[in-house]
Image (cartoon, rainbow, N blue to C red; front, side, top):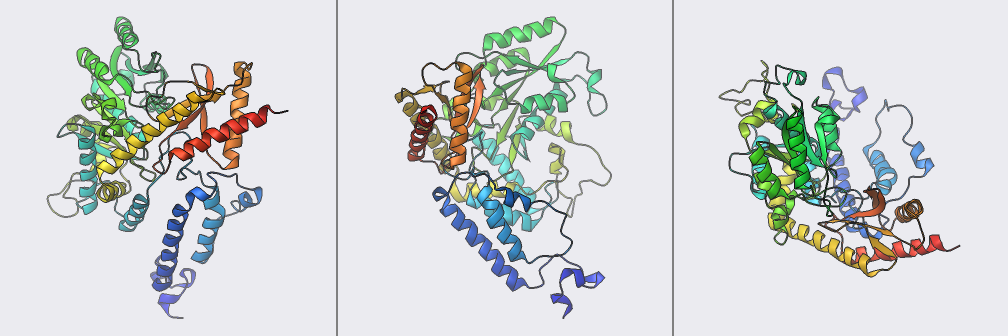
Length: 493
């Protein structure tokens, strides 16, 4: 057997490689994988959204690591037989759980190309570096941030929030936290967010060494938007107690109900009180490109920092988010560290600013390529129309709920999240929780549709988050029909 056709475990020690011994065979297999992926997307609506994995299949995922090679076609067969049928289902047109996004074929192809390119986006004088910079600048323009603002692509919305809040902490600490501890800050810092804020902000307080008490939860109004009067009172109380108000976290699209905090009023208050304004725009920031609904996030562009989750508004495959900061100098000063082995040069591969100076990751993948290719392929306007479409679909679902006597809307529909429940007469809250939980589980297990649940001000409800470019009104009508059917079946002795 010639050296270039020997299996890897029998090659000479100086000829080890992970490249295929037979490129033609690899080409055939790769083309088959692409064909299979496209066929899967084409037939999504014909299969179940989700289904539980049988115990026999689960057993295949136990055992020791493989020591010997296996044929790639056999490995791929396991993917199609044991993984694909039991996926989360968020690419399916009737998936409305949590707030996921439904992916995009162009983005998936871009991820493959990015992996082949193999560039480390920590830095380097490369084409990938320029694509990254262009993408963050496009996002800056799309969200209305000023010329000169900086951006960093990260794993998702949670990390984008952490980047913005870390910059806020450092800017308001009153000392250089590259050399001093947060324990040396003269007075405890306080961050303010509504009682509907995402849990990642609690994680951020602990990660930043501030502790849970640093996050002050501000009451919301009847529409689940931050109450400005309550915010002012919280700031006054902290100043009087010797604490330092540092940052307001405004939410452009809460996870529970999709509500958008009063951004212009909060921006005015932050300016008057000299506070950092951070906007968690993971759900709603991209409404800025939606022709019919961009007014919903007016004032967002006045923030000091903005968190974007590009899996949602742009339907990018996991994972990619973005942190935008108004002041590039503060952004870089927060994260840049000197290292003798990481020096910018005037020529060669290191003749470009290191991107890792704007985030926590020295090593990160070429996330930018999928956004770059998706925006070029589809155009910004297409994504804006899809965002308008999802808001219209949420209103359609809301109208269907309000027209059904057996259903109860549980919160105003502000954007793309609809909260409701099946509400038979005579049930107390505990019984309603059990009843609606059973509806949700039967709906998931049937494979017809997937929604989840939440609790708002002590009241349990079902929750449909419409973040899916494949959804049509008919899918939402089917959801209502199935909920009514399942609810009646449960009540039937």
